[in-house]
Amino acid sequence: MKQAILIIVLLVLCPISSTHANVGVFTGYGHSIELISTKSIQMVSEDVTIIPGRGRFLFDGGVPGMDRVEYDCTFVLKNLKDEKIIINAGFPLNSQFLSPPYDNIEKTSDLIARYNFIAQEEELQYSVKYSPGDKKKNLKNIFLWEMSFAPHETKTLRVTYSMPISMTLASTEINRKPKGYEKQWYSSLEGCMLELFGYVTETGNSWSGSIGKATFKVYIRGFEEYIAQRPMNEGMDEKTLQKAQKKFPVWNPTVLKITKPNKWKIDDDGFLKLEYKNYEPEDNILFKYYILSFPQTVDDTKRLISRLSKNGFSVEDYQDLKDILTEFNGTKTNNKRIVAFLENQVWYGKKPLKKIPEKLIETIKK
Image (cartoon, rainbow, N blue to C red; front, side, top):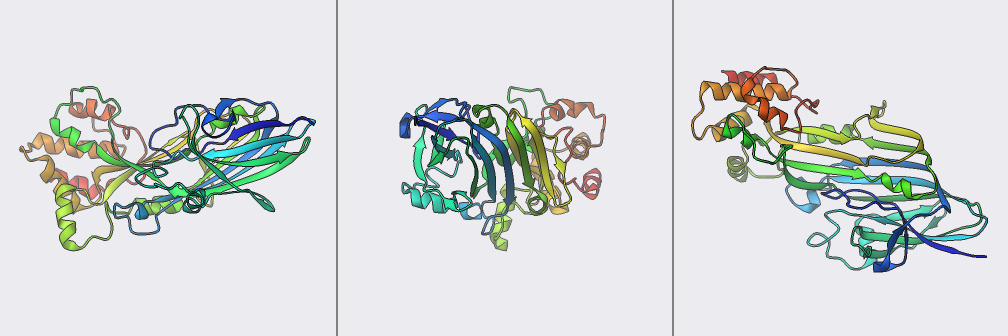
């Protein structure tokens, strides 16, 4: 009986930047892996649960304290052929943390343990191999294992793993070309941190036909309660904290969430949910949490004003700052001076995770 050797790659997204290539079915091994397509295997269903949460230790700027995200993925795969099919299935983990200087590890067993990576059927846990990437270097850190399908056999594959949530310094500006803001200090409000995680759905296009049913769930309730209250850094003594606040005046920042796609439904258990039938993957799932330079406390507000007003602050400047924060909360101010700035911000017109307290805005007014 003829056997087909295919490499099926299911890609999960957790990098700082987007993946640059379509992925799915490959042929070859190791560094000779190349993208192909197949009509032999159908993905009957895809059920993905994503759970972000705080790290194992204090959020102190080190990798051990980074927030983490857990993935629980169940795929139902069916052999459409009258012959036996053998595939090498795999997950590339394109994470910023799965490479030096964070993980300078070569042993597969160490990588599997570090990321709690398990690929299994009901009574079978697969032996996983590791490849640093594909031939074109579009995919990195691929975990591979062999699966065998009898003619027309259906298998339920479950893949689970966890990793730190990707984090980077960022900006809230949309267009980074030179712009004509009314006041130079407006730009000082654009610096931020960005935490992001996601999942690549477009891999489903490489399987035979559409996906019969796809369900994506993200549990955000606990994570968002935590991140909305978390200071810029945890575990500092008072002396170190005072020094840090001189450099970062907003110590209890405001958080903004932006998702792709944006049409999620929330259930009673706190899960954001998307459900599809005859699913043709298009947009990858992406959750971005912007840690903004907008205050949540009176002390942070005073320090922010002190930083912004080094060259002097006029009555007009105070009004502009007040109106920018008011616009962030979703209330129109009709301040023409700040229009160009507002239209260039990722948060403009978005519903904030947590509004800036009105008492702080009144503090600026006074």
